[in-house]
Image (cartoon, rainbow, N blue to C red; front, side, top):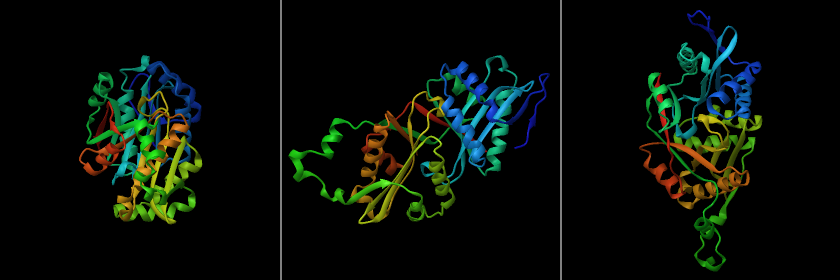
Length: 322
């Protein structure tokens, strides 16, 4: 990644983040947010080194000292997307270095790096009431995006548990759901998942799913990927992750990246069973919430998540077209 020289008496430079920058990045973020997110930054730095095409990590320096940073990752398939996009996860400038042009310099280099990865946009999320961050991104050219952020608690509600298992009303129970077997995904499932996805989207996204498998094996954060089968035939899958620290989060929160159901099984409750199993696993890990992102006009998917207890969050998606 090329360096970007900037005119200033401090001779600032933008360069790739290095493992030796970790402590300084954590320090800047802690001073700005009041929280220490060392695990998040450690994982993201490791990911950017092992998979440079999928992650972007840049430093802003003055007099060879890190005074700012930006972290982002590249999506190509998550949340039903059909075009690559770069997601800005974290940006920070040390308070004494603010006003020196570091944030704009980082964003210029981030956009250049995103274009080299064929991304069509840079996206991020902010809490709608965070006026400072909203104003900051607006000044960089971001606009309100077209996606909605939905979330729900991982803990099952009483009514949901009663609906699943009620010994007193066994006659009312949908026994067809017993045919659906859900298990953790293994690398050998890659072909089946790609085939399912191709039938749903009409695209060959082998590279995307290979990357997701590699991430799971690398254990960068917690990955939860499950496959549903009916009579030993793949019927659907779900992929999620727990990645503390994205978009300024200070608590562990799961992100549902991808869900796909074979067309012939969509009316048989496969999606509901997959989500129920996912929520159960997340709750056992003491993860409190799970969120996902949908297009504002994807009525079918919004309705599906609504029936499963998902509701809009206070986060808004901002986007910068490239």
